[in-house]
Image (cartoon, rainbow, N blue to C red; front, side, top):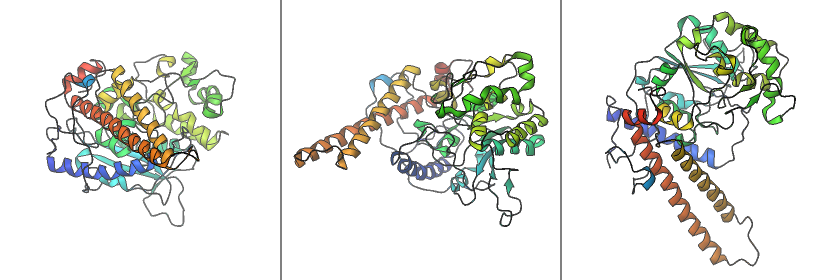
Length: 429
């Protein structure tokens, strides 16, 4: 079946090439994600080496299943086209925004995925080496003053270094190509997220967390006045004092908010005006706080992780409490942010429950194939037949979920449907 690309001015040839490249990472993602259990610990940040210049796309094979009968609950209002929109292909019209992609990395780590962005995406990568070897670091390599504060050290260094020469949009991400904290429906793939993103939303709203899922982080992750230590969120116990030190002007004017909430994990995009609403000197002071604080590398980084949305909040929000919580509805983030429009929050929730059940079945199937939990007198033929039935059921469930994703993407390719689903205040064109 021929592939129909729904972004009007993007040529089919380039779209197919980009699709093929993302296929490689999609397949790689399945090995990474489903072969191990992700840990909900944003401190486990991986840094990768990279490039400061995007290269042309490279071909691979297309991934995706053939569409089957449409599920009843997603039938209404689907665009006429029945062709799949492969992961990594944007449903949005091309834009002319200039973008920088800022990534901290460790020496020797791989970020070859950075070379696969098409030139018309207008993304220039800025990779910061956080563990430079002064004897072997090449001239011109971007580095940080000290390897402390996790990604925050590199993010602030970039802003300080480029404050007077910022692009339209700056994207701040970790350097791994796949991660548990990336979006589930985009196969946990960083390249897919960046290729599919609606950059008009960033310009329209000023700030966009790349993660749509609320957990962990929303709606009220940090209870800033807590007196109880929680090892799962070490940053909570020190947030009150840290907030006082980082934002003395805001505290003097409006006090310390009670709750801080935003989706984890320090990956976001921000417009130039939102960055320059603060003087360069403030970014210098925030980086100095990271350097001087007695808090560890991990904890200082996680404090900043839950404050970026506060720093880049709309100037129209005067109260600290209003700026302290940034939790867009998940279906709005997926629909207006990436073009996955399911018809509302309830339908997205049902899909996520189906995907969770499929994952549980996949884990049970793996255990059964490995003989975990089997009995000594168990009939082998009966066991194999049971495994066969489980495989068929899993294939059916995964196929149904992927079809619903495809129908959502088709709806997302229609601006009127996006507007109708998210509402006028959230719609970004």
